Image (cartoon, rainbow, N blue to C red; front, side):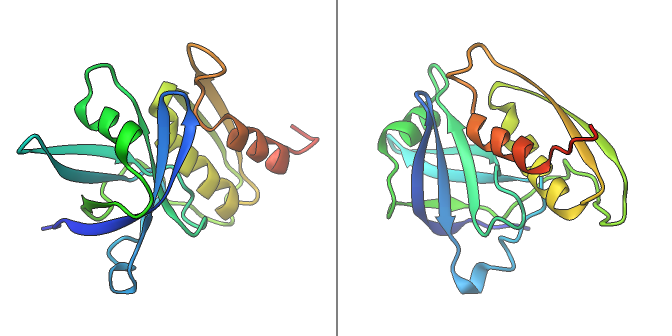
Length: 173
């Protein structure tokens, strides 16, 4: 059974006016426990007004990015999302369980695949991890992304997605 570990926040980055991403420092003795597969999530807990609050957030980094990062979009009435967006800073700690979930396809460097990814709003977080890892691991594969948002200014990871398109889009597609 997984247990919670106290992790220090390495970095808090504003992604949009109502979303932040948070990177964690992973101590050497927890490296194996916090190794993740694209598409997985983290469960976090904290105390708020004397009550334990748990929330799950998808990992948004690729397996080979060298960091463990999640994104938290502010939800109207969301206690934890408001707390994260307004108060969490580098150096703070959160109780975090090791990565969990099976939202992925096993990758094969020799595969010549074409994947379709569909996301809306903050649903891009696990999809970004999957796309980045797939493109890095399967050099002969392609990804088509359909991504919907209410506004372009609210689109999470717009610049990262543009960079991926520029890096991996070939003239033959």
